[in-house]
Image (tube, rainbow, N blue to C red; front, side, top):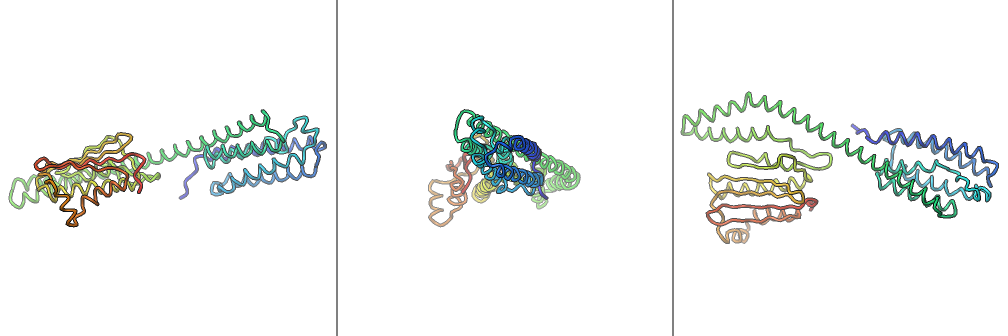
Length: 375
């Protein structure tokens, strides 16, 4: 399904302005046709202006037809028609500062370029028309400079308005998607709470009372209960239209009875690839805790958004890593820490620092500057 362009009203205004200015240009040609040096060329240029006005009306009204190359052609063709003025206007008309053959009709392309390409496109189109006007006037005086400034300013304003309109529409669309996803998640959470979570809670309590193998089942049921509660209470993890993913929501899914996750209240949006890599780094650190720190070890994941950088800290209360153990593991070909953690973070443009000692647990601190995160 094709998305509606939020800048459509700007295109319609451009079409209306072009029609009005074309009528004005026709009135000027009719009123001064007897004073032109080449009347036949004046009528030819006017015919081209009217035909191009009809073509741009069809293209700019129909959203799928607003091709970038057509807007560029609009600017180039208009500049070309402006440059025919020295061949059409007589010396007396130049001496009297008579309007160019295109008159105000030439002011429209910067608006179309701004609506299509943003502020930069609008300014560049206005600059091109300003140079064409100066060349057609055979001089660059104060009037030409003033007209150029107005052309660039109009293109800039329309471009800014189009950019803001598209940005606001995208933000509203994301907010509506998030609201719909949140409502659906709350509905599922109520359903799960009334069925699955209650069963798991009962199994956990009853198994703890019975002891023995039932206690092991109770422990497993408790772990699944915590994981399920974390899943239904976490913001949905997905990629937005801008290619961003919420690192906070992704890390909260790692929470278990032995792993606690602390994160900011709001979302921490990063490029989707960066988010996936940081989650993989965190998983690897937690997997090391599970493999090497002992069955009763607890772990904590802390996410901090400092504005200029993102910090992910993974800490545990296990037995720690003896001095030289990592170097020996890497020499033996076990590259979990060297590649899965440090290598991933280095590829993201960040740093990973390990702080550990026998008897006082292990702590990983991963720092990644914002604006980085590309391989």
